[in-house]
Length: 305
Image 1 (cartoon, helix red, strand yellow):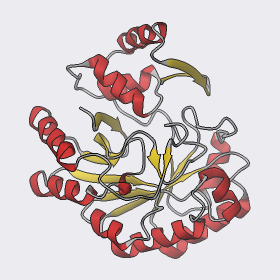
Image 2: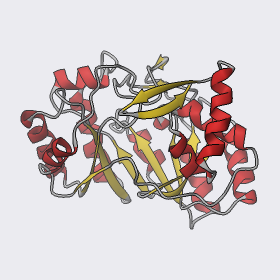
Image 3: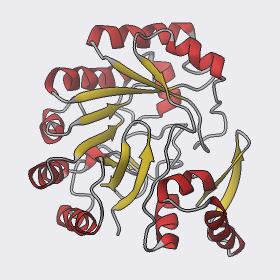
Image 4: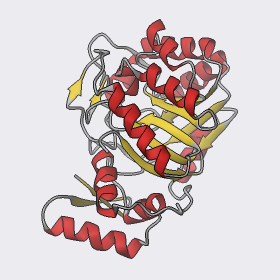
């Protein structure tokens, strides 16, 4: 399948089937911390980046052959709201599989547009991002296009809060020495408070980043950052549970998953329901053939392209 990956099993979204709506690394931002690497196609052009009918056909095939996931998550290797057919895909899921929840991971850069809000309004959960309020910090960590600003992202977040009836879990990524200062955390917490956002997820470096200067916060630093918010959850490695379903094409599932983000053998084992030793055996063969590489981050071995 070209557009579907997983399911990934996590503490937050339980068993979540991923849907990629744009070609690899098509995004509005070029975030320094992105686990998918640097952005190849940085754009604000909203169009049918991949055929909507093709995505729906793959969803039909997958859902007919497998146990329904808890969530279908529109995310992947770029910004999903760039796809003009995202609303059609959400409608298909909600009209035909109402028991399955729809989640969207977005960087919030297009949420100031009424057309985007209207397309995503039937989702059950949106996880928007806001990493900085100060413009210089936003420019450094999110590396936007010239006409994009922190103020525009906050405007989009405000429009989302005021026009979306589902759940919103705000995602904040913190890099040591960049946006974890008291000044920036104060500004972020004020925006959260003013908008009435009830759930905040605090993230830091968890796997290889696009740029080497991105630094992980220590548990103590993360706890200090979280204390600025009333309802902050610190997202850390090891919060996933084991998947019980083994994919029929294990090699294909591993490659499809690694194409979207670097992962450890333990990550792949958890999401695919396969023993770590078997995962390692397959990935080491791909390393030997030069198809993938491995990198050590935070004393963990990550496999990726």
